Amino acid sequence: MKTQIKKILILGSSLLMLSLLTGCDFTDYKTRIQRENDINNPTGNKSVCLAVGDLTEDMYPYTIKYMPGYHKDLHYRDPIYVNHKLNKRLALYAKEGLFTEELVGHDGDKPLYRYDLTEEGRKYVDWWGGTNFCFGRVVVEKVTGVDDQLQGQRVIIFTYHLENVPNWIKNKDIYSLYKGYGGLKEGVTGQIIEGGAHYYSISYDGTLRLKIGLSGAYVL
Image: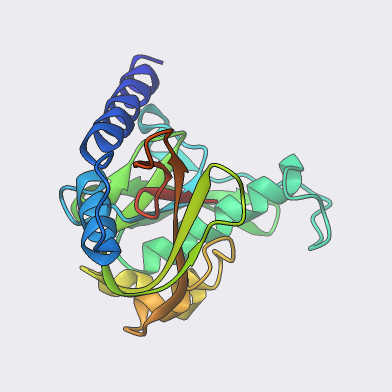
């Protein structure tokens, strides 16, 4: 619980810093957006965080369990669906060296595996809401549009690529799991990503304040 509170405080401080530092009105949107991403991701290794599951640090080593009744059309919050997804992700990340995998028994004819983080896994782990693996830095390519259709708001659209991309996320079986992040496949395979966006509120004096940026996304 203390860890979660600490995370919330850190995130809140980061957002406040972004608001203060990016309140000035830059005409060079590309420079501004790059700066905002780098402020929110100072290490250059946390542009994207991919959820493994709701496993906190004190739950490792973790032994999987099986829940009968799984089928692909279950609601994504159904406990059976969530458990199946967790088992699959643990196995895939173990193949990439982020977890150890140890056979510890069987549930009927199904193998039971125990997982723990490796040193390699600890390089990328983030404990926000469970186990996540983070990587990458946004590098802005060019601004492609400015949208002022909503009163008091401005959206800047841009293309970008990702750097600091580790080999484990280049596994198609892994990046294909995260359909909630548009452009993940392109980003991890070295392509340009279309449709990046930063959302701003427009102050009474015309200055912009960042509301939603690109870096720091947690993808379920």
